Image 1 (cartoon, rainbow, N blue to C red):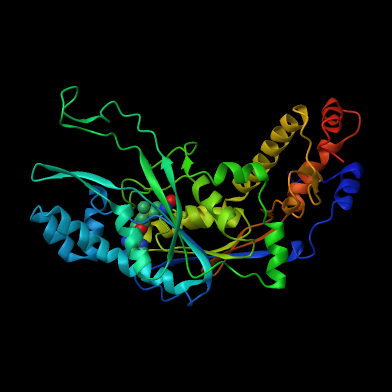
Image 2 (cartoon, protein in one colour):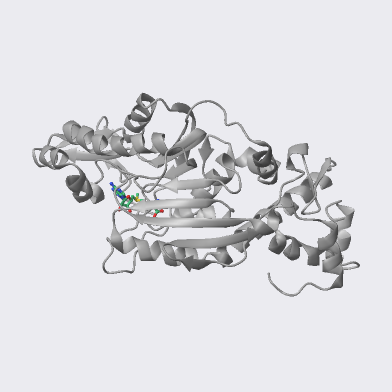
Length: 396
Ligand SMILES: C[S@@+](CC[C@H](N)C(=O)[O-])C[C@H]1O[C@@H](n2cnc3c(N)ncnc32)[C@H](O)[C@@H]1O
């Protein structure tokens, strides 16, 4: 992606200027070891978006973590009192949601990925509705619930069917989904004049809107859960990078600050870095700090290829529209590609240019230059590729 551009490419790049603030975009990423119930290092109203996934109450892998956060939850579990344990574990999380409400700026969003739990205690099989309990807690804090997303996570295990097999009536529905809860602090976000320009540049493609704003996500596979560090826990419980990547593009603008109070392996911060947002991540597990930091420092190839994939996907989608006799009515100036709506005209794709550690934080300037540079070779005259594109109205 970083070859020196030739003359034709340089001409093309000059003809498709970057927004004025492009060169100065610098994002910072803080990784804080601590307890999310007290986000001391995060100022009130300083965060525009929170994307997170807590330890799930009543899921065995988190029993010991909850025992440490809430001794009462451990006592209830030992006594086989499922609902009392469920409530005690959620009370530990309630303190984190209160901190989230504090640090969110007005109009900011809280996105929580959470699954319900199924568990047998004292021979009693039961569903523990984590998503409903988190939603209730967040609403009590004054956050406004918005339509949520059901993330369908196929379970390929042959043992996924639970209960009495083919005999009625003791079998249970196979549980293959999680929730992405979406809440807002206060009313619609208001954008200053300077923010309006950043907002316009942060537009997503029309067809991305159509896919991402569906209430059912079926195309995200679970992330690889293996952790190689012997100091770390057995499984990462990480979500796939695409999950925060989409939510960040959907609910924040370039230059915003994104927080994950349950950082884990740093997936949210990585997605923030790749999309030109700053981030703060908090986790109580020391072994994960170095892992998250290493992931951030080596994020460039992924960030570049994901941005390029967005563009390729857009080209393919556009070619189909044009072939169907529905050409785009507008052009995204910095990319030189056709787009469907006026709102996409200032859309640009940014990637980090370099990434380095500076004291406790990771720093990453980001620019649309690399994406525009990658796009330029597509414009070479007389190649079959360029003829096809010109005939489909994609290239200028
Ligand atoms: C479900 S995992 C998050 C995984 C993360 N989304 C990722 O992609 O790697 C939950 C994380 O919360 C952390 N955690 C649990 N209780 C915490 C607390 N009170 N404060 C901060 N972190 C906590 C755990 O150590 C764990 O890494």
